[in-house]
Length: 122
Image (cartoon, rainbow, N blue to C red; front, side):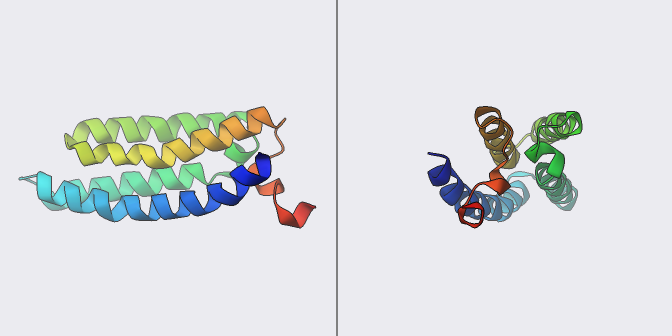
């Protein structure tokens, strides 16, 4: 099961995260009537922040700092989604979903880490 999850997690995460950004930015620009550029910039910066926090090595190894990074990423996604007042703002939760998958994988596999699973360790 772990090998299956690892093999498909990487491709699904890359495609999902790459597709989320343009969809969210276009939807925010179309849906917001005023301050379009400012709203799109806010969504873009929040997206980059959530993805950067999700790529933290501390999250992969379940350290205390990693837990703080995950909570900060969820807080940023929630605050910006609420502030934008556009349904597309909830696409910020897509990277948070992958953060949750990494944390749950580490909990289930005694903190082995997703990066230690795969063909090169066998």
